Every structure is written in structure tokens, then in C-alpha cells.
Length: 493
Ligand code: BG6
Image (cartoon, rainbow, N blue to C red; front, side, top):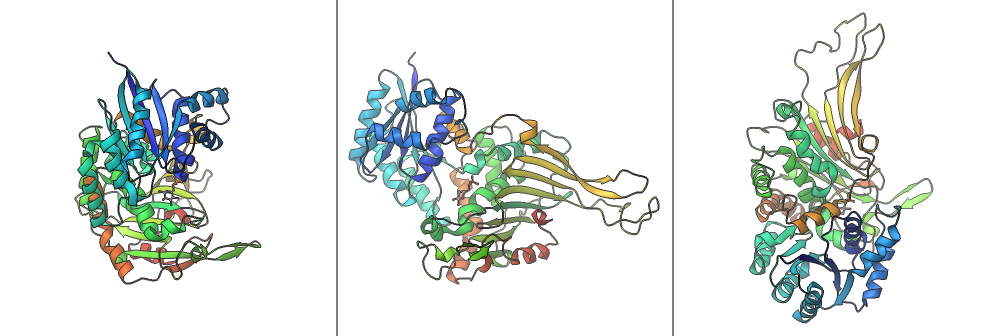
């Protein structure tokens, strides 16, 4: 039987994502022997470069978790020997024909499989897919394309992109990446939900008061203003990363762990969601700020951002799922750039204990005490991955005083091993044909359907964002939105 080989072509090889994420992830997989025995990595881009120049570029940016390990340099050498470069245009078949020749030569005598990673701007996705699929598809094995967001700007343009891609590819060949799905804690969400009896029965409107999905970064757009201004934080973070987490959080139990079973449940829950309304959204934009003698720029100071831009760099939203499990439970999202901290987390606030035995005014053991805090389960996606549960506990001593304490699972204490980068997991899955963590086209449609009307309203009316200082906790409007649903953001207590 013929041996298999995999060729991984990174289209847009000199771009930021390729340098920072894709090549380092491939190297980490290679280092830990996850890649197939026979593989080739080809960088494809417009500029002229030799194989050696590509190797130099890769080795200079091979900053990944493997850096400090023993025999790192031997492994680096071995890895770089498998890396090649091919220059060519994105919209002509010539370059891809050359690529095909190069790949065929490397694959000699083996069953060829080809993976293309499109790390390029969205306006050339279709050109590349057309040319590459026609001229450089695998002659006898599989051919797959990993596509990065943005998948369109709204429901219509996303649908159009899907239709164009499907002129050249089958849905099974398209791997739409949302790198948040490759994060360890997000993967663990289903394990936590479906394999712990203590959580499983609580996972509904009967016990959960609200769910919060929070993303914050402590830096601004820094050089990405040109891209960002076209999209804004709702498209950049909410419609994809946070909504994907929400879907995994709220979906019904899938029939099995097979990709189609999971994606069927995700699409169902997304289709049960109400379209987001303008009154349930708060938008903000960061303004310049001076702190400790250092000044931080406003979003509109970024030279690539058009003057007078009203693009939100912060948004908070209240979403609802109209099904039996989640009826009436607010799912609050908050996402922002240039805030006071970098963090992504999921917070589940449970209902109050009925009966109120330990509430204010109840004299127990000679002392009165304040209302009990409600239980809260927190999954900290990053940094410092952790899961913790807030419970009420008696403060030791002769009196009766309650205290809210945490049952903690800190990954760094419990597991003495590195957590792989999200791109490692996703690249490996794409190579292995595992589609569980990739977005199917009907999921994407359902996701856009939720956000498109409000995006349109915000943009047509040029709704002015609430300004917040760089490095602050964001606009106060987010608190008003939460209090409308009797919710307090858990990350500020
Ligand atoms: C990307 C967004 O998808 O995710 C960026 O386009 C954002 O704006 C990034 O900074 C955050 O990813 P991570 O993995 O660093 O949290």
C-alpha cells in the first residue's frame, strides 16, 4: 500500500498571521511528532523569495512554546528542510500551476493530500480558491482549504461568499476557522457540561439566571485599524468567537461526538436565537488617555482609521434563545479593545437559593449577615486558564458568618504541561479531517442572521459610540444594559 503524504500550502506566507501563528503551530506539531511522517510545507505569496529566505523568515519568528526545549535547534533544522517557497499571483493560475509541479515532485510515489491555508484578505479568497482548486488540487488524495474570517460582512455577503466557494469546492473541503474553538477551555466546555452530573441538571433556565461571555484586550487596534474599521468589534469578536462559545454552551446534547452531530445541535440553537435589537446593544469607542505620564492614543488617532469613524471598539449585548431550555435567560456579551485588562471568560450566574434561610435579618448564632451571594461558575479561557465555582461558606469560628469562597481549578497548578496554541489543534484537526471545530455554512448563516439587522441599523444611522478612556473598564452604558435585565457583570465585583 502507498504511503500518504500531506502538503500544507500557506497562501499569504509573508503575512502576520502566517508568521505569528501558522508556521509556529506547524513547528510545534512537528516537534511533538503529531504531523504525518511525510509532509511538506510550502509558503505561497506574491513577493519573490528563495526557499532559504522563507526558512530564514520562519526561523526568525518561530517563537512558540517549544522555544526553550532541548534539541530545539536540531528539530528546527529538520523542520526548515521541509519548507519551500513558491511565488505567484493570487488571481492567476500560473503560480498555482508552478506550485502543482513543485508539490508533485515532492509527493513522488506517495498518495498525495493537499491542505491550503488561506491567510489572505477576504477580497481574494475566491480568486485563490478558483485558481488553486483548478490547477493544484490533489490528483488522487484529498484537497482541503482552511479559510479565515471575515466570512463576509453580513448575512448577504457571507451567503455570496459561500456560494462562490461552493462553485469550486464541496462543503466537506472547506474548513472555516474560528480559532476560539481551538482554545483548551472552550474544548473543555462540553466535557464539563456533559460528563459531570453536578452540572448537567443545572444547565437550564430553572437554575441559571444569566450567562456572561466576556472578552477584553488591554491594547488597541495598533496598526490593524485599516482592517478593523471595516468590521468593528461586533463582527471581529462577537458574531464569531463569543457566539461560537455561546452555541457550545447552550446547545442540546448531541447524538454523539461526531462533527455533524455537534454541528447539527449548534445550528439548532443558533436558529432559536432572537435577532439582536438595537435597544439591547451598547457600543463604545476608546479615546486617548494619559496615565502615569504615558499617553495612550484614541482609536481615531490610528492613521489607518478614517476621520470621524464611528466604528465600535467595544460592544455589550443582551441575547436570548427562544427555546424551552433557555426561555428568558439573558446571555450577555461584552467585548472590547483598549480596556484595563486582557481576559476572556464565561460566567454563569445561578439563581438564588429558594427559602432564604441565611438571608439578612435572620438571626443565626447571635449575628446577622448580609444576603448570600449566588453561586457563580467561571471558566477563564485566558490568560491563566481556570475553572472556579463560587460557593457560600461559613467563616470558621463561633459566630455564624458567611463568606463567598471559590472552589478552584487552576490549570497551572493542576496540570504541569503546556497548553497548545489554538492553531495547533485546528491545523491538526484539518490534517486529520476532523470537522468538529470548524464552522459549517448553515451555522454561519444562522450566526449572521442574529447580528445583521442591528449592524445595519448601527451603520445606517451612524450611531455614535460612547467614548471610554484607553485602559478603562469601558462605557457605563454596559452596566445600564445589564441592569435592565437585573444582572451585574461578574467581572467587576
Ligand atoms: C482575532 C481578532 O480573531 O482574535 C483580533 O480579529 C483579536 O482583533 C484576536 O485580537 C484575539 O485572539 P486571542 O487568541 O489573542 O485572544
